[in-house]
Structures are given as C-alpha cells and as structure tokens.
Image (cartoon, rainbow, N blue to C red; front, side):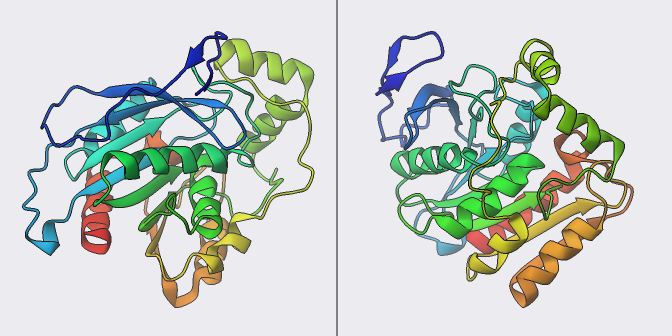
Length: 282
C-alpha cells in the first residue's frame, strides 16, 4: 500500500493467479522499498506454453524505458507488443515519469522501481523466467539491478540497449541538452511540463555504482549488450567498455546504422532480442 501521485491510497488488488488465459491488461501502482508508487502494467503474451517441456518455459519480460518515457508512450507500447510474441510483459513508469509518484533520480533510485516490477512479475508467474530489458537510462538500471539484487527480485537474463557505461558523460550535443534538463531549474521546468517528467533537484550522494562497475557482478546471469553505431547520445566506446567489463560472460551486438534506444530499435532487432531471451532464459 502506498500513496499515488494524486494523494490517494493505492493497494494492488491483482490476483497472483494469471492462469485463466485472459488477455486483459492488469494495471496497478506498485510500492517500492522507499515508498514510491510505480504505475505498472502486465500484459499477457500471445505464446501458448507447454509447461511439461523445459524448452518452452514461460518467460516474463520486464521492460525499463528511457529517460522521459513512460508506460503509455507509443514507443514503449510498441516494444512491449513486440516482446509479447515471446512471453508476458511488465511495463512501468519510472519514478517521476507519467503517473508514477516521486521524482526522477536519473538512474539511481530507479533500481528500486525495477525491483518492484520484477517482484510483481514473480508474484504473477512464480514459475516463469524473468528477463529485464532496459533502454538508455533503463539500460543502465537493468545492469545495476542485476548486480545488486540476488533475492526474489532477481532476474534470469539481462538485455541492456543503448546504455551509458559511465556517469556524467557530456561528450555529445544530446547529452549536453540532457544535463541542462537535469541540472538547471529552467531545464527541470521543461522536463515537468514538456516531457511529463519530474526531476529531483539534488545531485547524487553517494554516487551510485556505475554500469561498467556493475557488469562484472552480473555473472553467471546471461547478459546481452545492444548498441547502435550511430547512437547520437553515447558513442561506441560505451558498449565496448561494458563488453570489456563483462569479458566472456557478456555478449555484444553492435548494430550497423542504429541510433538510440526504443525509437531506433526496429521490429527485426526486437525479434532477435526476443529470440535471444527465449534461448537463454527459456
């Protein structure tokens, strides 16, 4: 039980038994460990599983969107629909985004939001394999979550798309604009009213574990790093740094012609990610 952005008390009333076959999405607010209400949606996939066959074990994708996204954005719904061909899908809005409570900490406390979503997926499908897939800021969050959570909120496979390897990067014009949005009062006003994103005004203290520092702690959980060679936010030294930190444990796909995050992930790439997840987590 927790407080919604509108100040109402919210309790999840979703039954953990999802074996009825209903395709109606489930929507609720999930409480995080630090008391933030996270707007979350559970969509049943189109896959018919044979539970007696290990190779077709049920999969639930938990998708972590990029900065200024939210669960209702068309690009988030498109990606969720693509993954629904391979399993069930949990989408959610990070704190400070959309209808979720709190303010964005741009990748720090968001690990708690993802943990709540993964925990919900495990309650709804206790025998399923859970795959976290994150984009941009969400890509950094799935890496840190996998390194930090080895309990019931753990993940069985990790896919990080268009993620930074290190913090405070300002080497491209888009990232300089992002830093203006985060660090300047007028930028945070633009974020609030232009992007439906409420951003915390205080800096990190302490500075969280960086994605590159998190990656070695993920093993033996399967890890896929995906990045476009035309990413306008984070150049290719970021995925290469992550892959180097992963060593033999991680797999890197450097995609020719691809830009940044969800908008640049076409249906063919999403299908390949779905196939990878099915083979590693199934």
